[in-house]
Amino acid sequence: MIKILLLNTLFLFPALILANYTILKKKGNILIDGKNIYPAKTLTRGTLVTQKNSWIQLKSDTGVQFTLGPSSTMALGPQSPVLEQGSIRQKLVKKLRQGAVIVKTKQASFGVRGTDFLVLANSLLGESEIIVFTGKVEFSNLGQKKDQILVKGGQWGGLGGRFGAQIGKLMDLPANIINHFDQNSSML
Image (tube, rainbow, N blue to C red; front, side, top):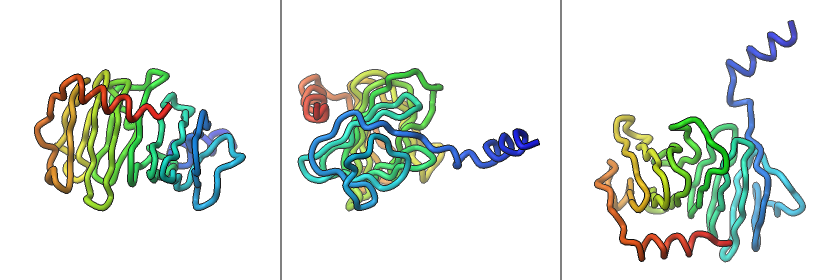
């Protein structure tokens, strides 16, 4: 009987299942809910903040590995992490179901169909941007369910603020610009 109740609870309330994030590497001053993360080895929830010239690389138990860039803020919780400000470099280390959302901003969600991409969030201007290095990512407007597009390797897309209320036309980026973003977002 207890097993049935536990299974029903997990089925009816999936938000109770928390992802665990293992800290792989870090540089500089990183806070979780306003406190230094040292000596933590894993994180499950809270607001993660990197200071200027700081970054943290995490791996979730769902197979997602990412680096939160300098001067960034991300909320970790029961669902996909939410990038509130700054940048995140995302790489998949384990195959997930196609279309699984692995990161959100206030304006957009980014579903996995690829392996390596960069998401930028600007809370002041209310903007979200994506640059895909390899693979494909489904870029979805959280304000308009039908507004979504598949972004392929070598492409850039933006939403909100200067880019408008809908996802606009994607840009194919030249190799030198892709290489610039790749080198400057690796952080390792």
